[in-house]
Length: 100
Image 1 (cartoon, helix red, strand yellow):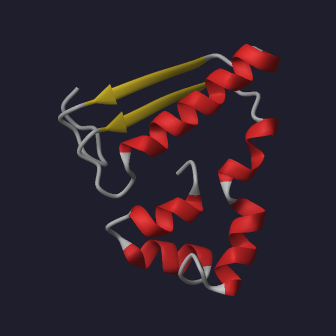
Image 2 (tube, rainbow, N blue to C red):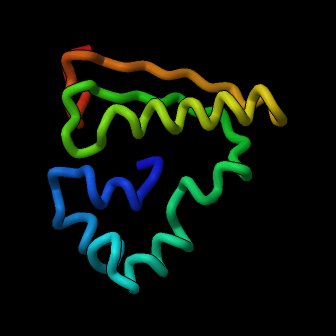
Protein backbone atom coordinates (compact mmCIF):
# COMPACT_ATOMS: atom_id res chain seq x y z
CA UNK A 1 0.00 0.00 0.00
CA UNK A 2 1.46 3.33 -1.06
CA UNK A 3 -1.41 5.64 -0.09
CA UNK A 4 -3.52 4.02 2.60
CA UNK A 5 -6.22 6.68 2.43
CA UNK A 6 -6.74 6.07 -1.28
CA UNK A 7 -6.78 2.34 -0.57
CA UNK A 8 -9.83 2.89 1.62
CA UNK A 9 -11.73 4.12 -1.43
CA UNK A 10 -10.25 1.86 -4.10
CA UNK A 11 -10.01 -1.63 -2.62
CA UNK A 12 -12.61 -4.31 -3.18
CA UNK A 13 -11.93 -5.67 0.32
CA UNK A 14 -13.46 -3.17 2.73
CA UNK A 15 -13.12 -5.30 5.88
CA UNK A 16 -9.36 -4.95 6.09
CA UNK A 17 -9.36 -1.18 5.78
CA UNK A 18 -12.02 -0.74 8.46
CA UNK A 19 -10.30 -3.24 10.74
CA UNK A 20 -6.71 -2.06 10.29
CA UNK A 21 -7.24 1.70 10.14
CA UNK A 22 -10.12 2.15 12.61
CA UNK A 23 -13.00 2.89 10.26
CA UNK A 24 -13.73 4.34 6.86
CA UNK A 25 -11.31 6.86 5.34
CA UNK A 26 -13.47 9.82 6.39
CA UNK A 27 -14.00 8.65 10.00
CA UNK A 28 -12.08 10.70 12.58
CA UNK A 29 -10.35 7.69 14.17
CA UNK A 30 -9.18 6.44 10.78
CA UNK A 31 -7.94 9.91 9.82
CA UNK A 32 -5.87 10.05 12.98
CA UNK A 33 -4.32 6.62 12.42
CA UNK A 34 -3.72 7.35 8.72
CA UNK A 35 -1.96 10.57 9.64
CA UNK A 36 0.50 8.58 11.76
CA UNK A 37 1.04 5.49 9.62
CA UNK A 38 0.18 6.18 5.96
CA UNK A 39 3.36 5.39 3.94
CA UNK A 40 2.77 8.33 1.59
CA UNK A 41 3.39 10.70 4.51
CA UNK A 42 6.98 9.45 4.86
CA UNK A 43 8.29 9.39 1.28
CA UNK A 44 10.80 12.11 2.17
CA UNK A 45 12.44 9.66 4.59
CA UNK A 46 12.67 6.66 2.22
CA UNK A 47 16.26 5.55 1.71
CA UNK A 48 16.18 1.74 1.33
CA UNK A 49 16.39 0.06 -2.07
CA UNK A 50 13.01 -1.35 -3.10
CA UNK A 51 11.67 -3.79 -5.65
CA UNK A 52 8.03 -2.95 -6.42
CA UNK A 53 6.09 -5.94 -7.77
CA UNK A 54 2.52 -5.59 -8.96
CA UNK A 55 -0.06 -7.68 -10.79
CA UNK A 56 -2.26 -5.79 -13.24
CA UNK A 57 -5.29 -7.87 -12.26
CA UNK A 58 -4.98 -7.03 -8.57
CA UNK A 59 -8.31 -5.56 -7.54
CA UNK A 60 -7.29 -5.19 -3.90
CA UNK A 61 -4.50 -2.72 -4.65
CA UNK A 62 -4.79 -0.76 -7.89
CA UNK A 63 -1.81 -0.82 -10.23
CA UNK A 64 -1.40 2.91 -9.70
CA UNK A 65 -0.38 2.19 -6.09
CA UNK A 66 2.72 0.33 -7.28
CA UNK A 67 3.44 2.88 -9.99
CA UNK A 68 3.05 5.74 -7.50
CA UNK A 69 5.47 4.12 -5.03
CA UNK A 70 7.95 3.52 -7.85
CA UNK A 71 7.73 7.10 -9.10
CA UNK A 72 8.22 8.44 -5.57
CA UNK A 73 11.29 6.25 -5.16
CA UNK A 74 12.63 7.37 -8.53
CA UNK A 75 12.32 10.97 -7.41
CA UNK A 76 14.15 10.14 -4.19
CA UNK A 77 16.93 8.56 -6.25
CA UNK A 78 17.12 11.37 -8.79
CA UNK A 79 16.89 14.30 -6.42
CA UNK A 80 18.64 13.20 -3.29
CA UNK A 81 19.67 9.85 -2.04
CA UNK A 82 20.42 7.37 -4.81
CA UNK A 83 17.66 4.94 -3.81
CA UNK A 84 17.93 1.88 -6.06
CA UNK A 85 14.49 1.01 -7.41
CA UNK A 86 12.92 -1.44 -9.84
CA UNK A 87 9.29 -1.84 -10.92
CA UNK A 88 8.05 -5.19 -12.22
CA UNK A 89 4.46 -5.45 -13.43
CA UNK A 90 2.93 -8.81 -14.26
CA UNK A 91 0.02 -8.07 -16.63
CA UNK A 92 -1.74 -11.42 -16.12
CA UNK A 93 -1.34 -11.73 -12.34
CA UNK A 94 -3.53 -10.60 -9.45
CA UNK A 95 -2.84 -9.88 -5.76
CA UNK A 96 -0.76 -13.06 -5.56
CA UNK A 97 1.86 -13.35 -8.30
CA UNK A 98 1.85 -17.12 -8.83
CA UNK A 99 2.80 -17.94 -12.44
CA UNK A 100 6.36 -16.71 -12.71
